[in-house]
Length: 74
Image (cartoon, rainbow, N blue to C red):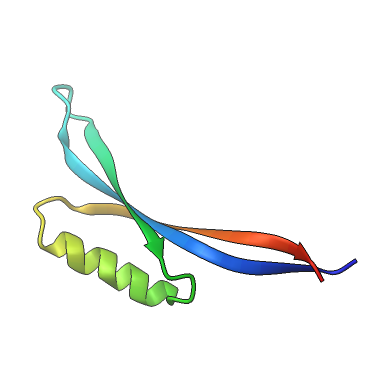
């Protein structure tokens, strides 16, 4: 039995630093962008995340890409 992975939607999660605690530890938050095209390149998505947060005062800590697939029998 062969299985096909059909791409569905994807999501982009951008983790950024939003200040520090009174003890000096960084406070990280995240912003999610849902329904990203599944055929968008990883390089383009990374550049978009960086460009969006270049308009902000918060530095980007991490960029995550979450892809969803439907598994079907062939």
